[in-house]
Image (cartoon, rainbow, N blue to C red; front, top):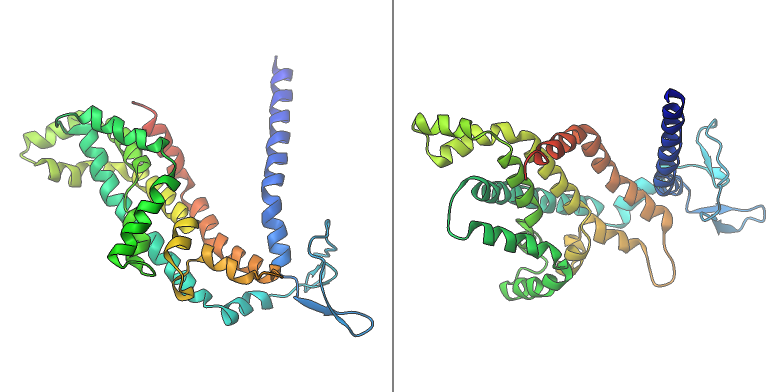
Length: 295
């Protein structure tokens, strides 16, 4: 029995390692392309481009600079993207967009989730069911009406147009409601006996013990907004208002794609998300366990 268990464990590790390798392949390829020079001079003195689609590439990690695709790697592409495009402004736009949307979700989703978990009001279960039903509606269906509203308000190419339609979401409301349901009611009853109002109980007792769920909601929202492409694409036509995802298309023309620049921009865009996820991954587990205790 023990031998079978070890064999099963070994097979599981092999599958997981293979899956990790496949998942990491695009990131590794992007990193290699990002440090590849744009051009090189051949033996005849003619400038040529690199065959970045070649796999496996000619890599020598034991030399510095590292040789990739037959040429010494360079970090010049990372500096160049700041010179040829307003990349720093795109970073600022993305940070503002992601932060404002995240703050909106933390405010409205937690308030709504607490209301559906603890308060009593007419047709509470009906309205909650209606909210959940909207999860089955594709986002593309509501995108055009939202866009028309932003046009009428004059919010195109503004931060208002980016974040206002994204200030709340049903998934966050559901997540917080499930977490609040797992909190013992005795804590709120004790606060009520001490004369605390509903809002004071929510602020002083419920929110402090809901940090895992709140942190998970913040990370989910921030990462999702950081990687959002379609809505910023609709709302921005001025390149100074682009977010990072929209700005990546700036390195592609009708006839040629500057892969080195695009991959360098992609790597810089991805690194903050990796750091955030690795730093706060424990909150994902804690929130998942807590929200699964009670439905």
